[in-house]
Image (cartoon, rainbow, N blue to C red; front, side):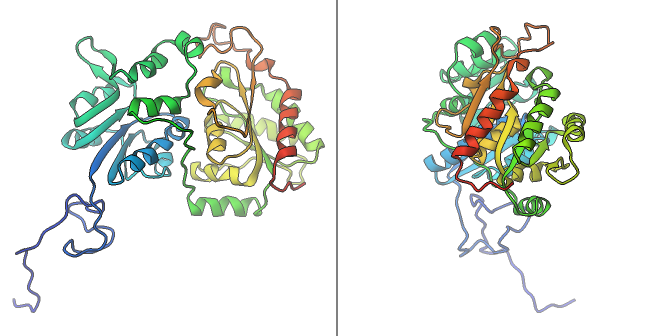
Length: 383
């Protein structure tokens, strides 16, 4: 069979150090490497290891941008759990998201990095860190000589103590997790904001659902532990006051909070569209703060989402330590804490897990904080 098309690999080369090179597949620009104007060499390869908790992804979100500022040619890979991967995909300067599993474990072991930053306590994950080929490692690792978790480097000792002793978290620490991530990585923290790129399609769906209007007050009822949750009757009482003031309410929470959201909606819904509870996808929930004037939340993903949007937020603390999560530079945050002497306990559950510290945060204090935020907000309010 004859053909007029003659193909030859003679003299052909490819740029394996290019950011767009995939190996075995055409690059996104569909160009041969010789003479390509999109050639973007990677001069510094970084692996971030952090798998769990949506809020933690946002807390660490300023770090990739800081790395890229320090190393303009950096290529940043983030090894993450499946649940948190959608958030990491929205973080600026992350070039590749690897979802944790047996296959990706083998992938990172076959690769070489200039820097590995490990913030994961799971032995199965932290145990990989000493075996990854890297010029520099920092953070947490697992293994010999004591078959235990251990810090890598002097800067990681404070971070290790925070993850190991609750008393240190509650009484010996005055740094936020973001500061600690930067410290472990070896970069000075100067108040860099959270980085979050909201998907345009999700933004459009939320804007359409809320009729393109702003000014909603978001009541975010979620909390990863029962002891972190404000009593449902307090949410209902607060909602009634806000409705009496003429406001519109969005009731939000995670999948595990739907029964609480439904209970609040049932108690508050007047049938005229002033109270909503929508089953948002994660990407849509990320866009919700753009339609809000203020959020009320416990120590949860919602709080960090409000920070990412620079949305005024009233955050309620019981067992959690505000020093860990409230940025020093944040000027849109009102912190309300429990009056119990055992708070914060960093979830040592000295109460036996019964809770009660969140019960001491009053509806009046929360309502006053919301009113103060609205009075100083430059955003238009719709009633």
